[in-house]
Image (cartoon, rainbow, N blue to C red; front, side, top):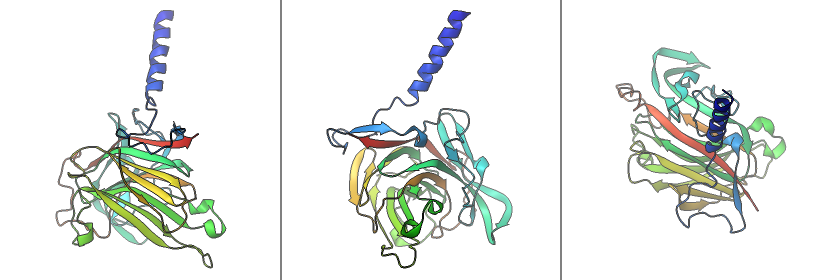
Amino acid sequence: MKSLKKISILVLLLLASSLYAQNTPYFLTDEDPKPLEGKWVLVKKMSDEFEGKKINTKKWQISGQGWIGRAPGLFLAHNVTVADGYLQITTTQLPKPIVKQGKTFTHGGGYAGSRKGMTYGYYECRMKANKTFMSSTFWLINDREDLNGCDNRTTELDIQECVGEITGENPELQKFDHSMNFNTHSRNIPKDCDILKGTVGGKAEIGAKVYDGYHVYGVWWKSKDEVLFFLDGKFQTKITPAADFNIPMYLRMVVETYNWNPVPADGGMTGSSKDRTTYYDWVRSWKLKD
């Protein structure tokens, strides 16, 4: 009996250690941008392999953290699950419209936001998008409640925003189903603060629909004015935000609706549950240390 107990404990320890066996971000050969003397250190409080049977609510909040979603897509906690080694956010159509905060919601999305935040580091996830008109996203944003003075503004770092079905006619957004779409935003600038407002971003071609397979979306938030984007381990481009990015931000994995991509005539939910689900294989955050 004692031997069996020892074996069981050993197995549990091995499983626990395997959850974070990765010791560097996902890069192709010669694509790692860190200096030779640097070392990537995993930030466990903002990383997850999603190996359990339910979401780790000590790391992730799934009710929206005060944000109920952009109409007509309402965040629903029961649309966010962990199973088969994936965080899964499933899109749904509500049995009947719901009115909240003066807005009408007809569809259900989902939200998973980190409870912890940090500044400079490397952030990445392995994700497969859903096939619907609703989004599949991975991004960071600050919390204005933490801030005072001229820092009481919004900085947002979008690593990937995409949709599975394009229903809108805006010609500039017709690549959202087969590209990595990234942005840096500076907005909500307090009065009398000499800080620029603006959006600076870009795209990277995937070569297939975003729902055809898994892709690794990554960003190195290197400094207040250097943000480097990576797709499937390969460097894409470097961006200088409109204003300094020097405020801690929090991770977001969100499935929502966009104003520019309206609900299709058939409701957009005709596919299987699998087709209507965004899958996150893992999410990892890293600090660069000397």
